[in-house]
Amino acid sequence: MRDEDRRKGEEKRKHELMSRSVTVERRAAQSETSKIKQKRTEEELRQSKEWMESIFNFFPDVIAVTDLKGKIAECNLEAPRLFGFRAIKELIGRSVFELISPDDRERVRFKMEETLSRSSVKSAEYTLLKHDGSEFRAQVSGGVVRDLFGKPTSFIIVIKDLSPRMKMEETLRESEEKYRLLVENANEGILVAQDDKHRFVNPKMVEMTGYSQEELMAAPFLGFIHPDDREMVIERYRRRLKGEEFPQVYPFRIVDKSGNIKWVEINAA
Image 1 (tube, one colour):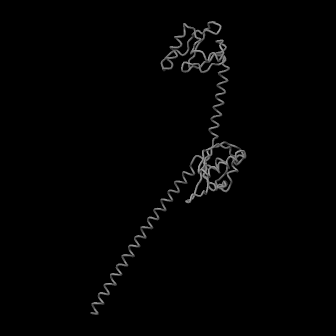
Image 2 (spheres, one colour):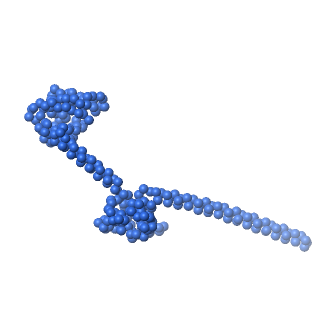
Image 3 (cartoon, rainbow, N blue to C red):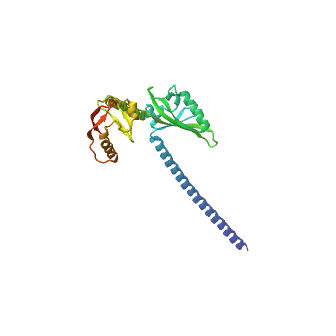
């Protein structure tokens, strides 16, 4: 009987040892699986962070994160380039108000308060300051970053330099002014017709016809052309609108306000 009890006891211990061994192995496997998952998660987070940093740093406009008082906590590579600093570290800790023209600082303070209440506001244009004190115009938009409880923690700001656009607009204005002066002082009469109406006449055309600019603008399409030449001019004008070939330079007669007949030459463009 003792031998039987001893045998049963040994079998029970073996069974318990085997069970413990299986449990240990299972836990070891689970631990290994957990470590693999953790490493995979960490790798995914690392890749995601690198991806976000790439977007952050290579974004063409300035991106900056500030505290609720406007002190810069983080910014991308475009920020020092636009504001004329050598490195990002020179901007960290500065107040954004140092980079804003005194004339616009109160507007920005108001916008920050408005953003806190609305989370985001429409973009607006401001005059900003470079490191050397020179001014430039920029479009600024922003939003509020909140924690899990909805409490505001910081501002995120995007700044777009408007200098290239404004330079292009200035170049266009200068070009238009040069063209206007050229047209107004030309020795040839210039008339622009569109949709069977006169859209523009220069001073020389006024002089040639004897009509005022207002009279010419209100007159029927090419109404001052000699009746015998009117059909020819209108027909060639219509062919031009259709893209058909026609003589671009040709003579015809006009009748001025005093009834005098004058020969002129048109150069249709």
